[in-house]
Image 1 (spheres, one colour):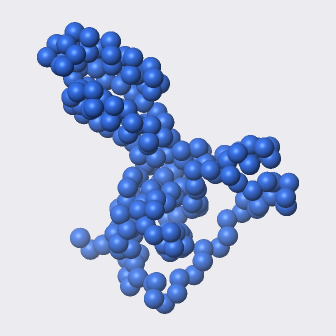
Image 2 (tube, one colour):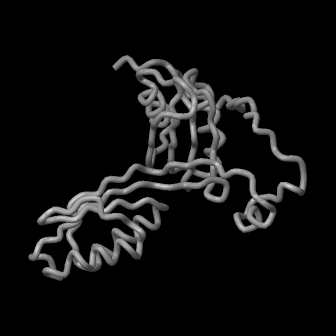
Length: 211
């Protein structure tokens, strides 16, 4: 299954290499990784999406905690957070396309249906910008291909996630989360990183690579 981790890390050279090396040692594939500035000075925000068994989330989080460059780490699910992805798609729109001179108008119609924006228009191509869930982006790409259009380039940022704010009990119920009135609000203080058992410990896990 897919796990989404949001990590605040120190803004220092080599941080990205350290995190990527950690997942390599854990033998876990990173599906997407986005990095950018956060609301804190000298701190970057990473959104890491990885493919791993459900039981591996504890191990991944504990291992990330052990990196001295990690400030905070949180795992979020779709019901708890707003998750979006940005995608740029360049489509061939020359008169040689299956729909001929009507290619552009049909691409514009598809863009309206999927709420995408036309950000570049050239004699031989049209570029669309789309923000939404991964499934929505995949849906647009599939429709374009099945309609006979030639997709020249695709550039995707990967997932970006942020926890939702406080909502009423009806909204929380619709999201599939617990009602805040059922008990005291959970503490925002992150717990201490759980310890790994002996068989989960990776020798030399956080040592600097010599290469």
